[in-house]
Image (cartoon, rainbow, N blue to C red; front, side, top):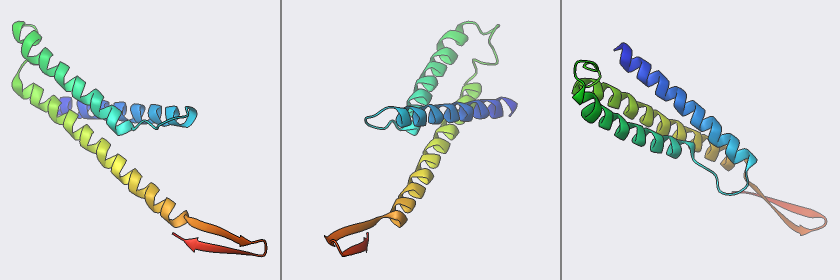
Length: 124
């Protein structure tokens, strides 16, 4: 259980670093925005593939030295931490997107300049 919590906390810390880096990149660089959750998902999938390769190919050959890391149950624990962090990333992204959309919807007002003396305010 301690290994699962360590894996989960380290994955969530990596999520925070990736999201902050993507926001900074989006703020200071013109062009299309980079989605932090999608970048994190790509990193997690690559990490999961490399972890599977290490567990079942490399560690399996050195059973006496890496016995506790080469078991399928240890891999399943690490994979569960990866998947839980991935779910947290997309849940965080979904909540932030809904919050941003609600804020934009509340602030959206269309001003129609009909003449120099009047303005029409239409809520969208």
